[in-house]
Image (cartoon, rainbow, N blue to C red):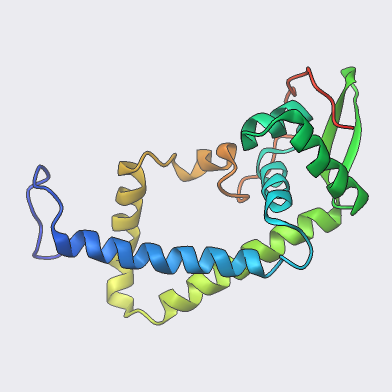
Length: 181
């Protein structure tokens, strides 16, 4: 930290809040542009399903509906469109034939990867414009900010569907109840 170290109990200054608000606008713009990079291939609700499956691994309809906060019939329609488009594969769960498993096809994974790569390149471009000496302070400050906001540690954030950096756990048990299709 620099010479402006303050008491941990002191409230944030207007300057600090304004700086974070400026950075948030940039991050929202980067995120929106990354979504726009795939909007000719999928809708935003469909992209949410793809990202969720990419980050959490194979899912069933009940899991998709619950995670998205939508009625199972809405999730079914989204899944059907993604299956028809060749972006999601639907198959029987080998442990429970009443349960259908949804997983990404290579084309579905490519869309998520394209969006993620676009976002990473944009963030890298912004960081490259910053002085190297300030970037060093950025890492601990942003990690502390994320932790203060309740963000999970990097090794656990994938479980909530916020990132696709951690490989999915293909062997975990899927909750049964509702099927897709």
